[in-house]
Image (cartoon, rainbow, N blue to C red; front, side, top):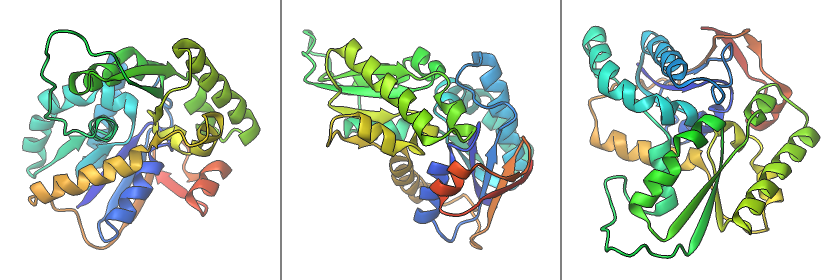
Length: 283
């Protein structure tokens, strides 16, 4: 049995790497749906169908708990799967299984509050004192999940999402750093113009963007806090496993990497990020 990590492509490796650091003895199986990547520009029902198919493949590969290391899948598909599909899959596979997302841990990190907390409304709207910028895919921006869920918990935080269409695809294809730098700079500047100033802190709301976190840090004013999803997810998963000892997660430290696309070595950009060449097998 293992922990499954799912993404449309290689961006989820940023979460996977942090999870393996946090749980070095656990078995992991990673699935990149590269034949359909990226998900950010796809229709909602298609995202749900693709995410369901990827999770089923991971359950077949022995995963008991799957982390959707994809903001788009977490924003669009997760609730549907948890409500209507996971119970059926649990009965069919005959073992404890679940699918978790990465947006909840990110919002907890952004607000400093647990997901179960909801602010008491006192009538007059509190003037926002701090601005958070969320760099994300078009689908995540359209869902407004960060604006809605953060506002439920912190009325003093204003949230502005900046959709970055095409950026995840460029990262997936291993575009050179100079090309990526121009795109990142353009989106940071677009958000600054829309807000009227730079955000007080930023969320990289697509796991692909974590691969180029240094470019975002360079484009933002020096010292701007950036919420890193891999750390937030690892913290939340640690707490989750403490509450749910029923999941068998393996103890051999196995690492399997699967792709729906062309198997073999991944891009030079991923190799640099990972610290070594990384080879995928056919899913």
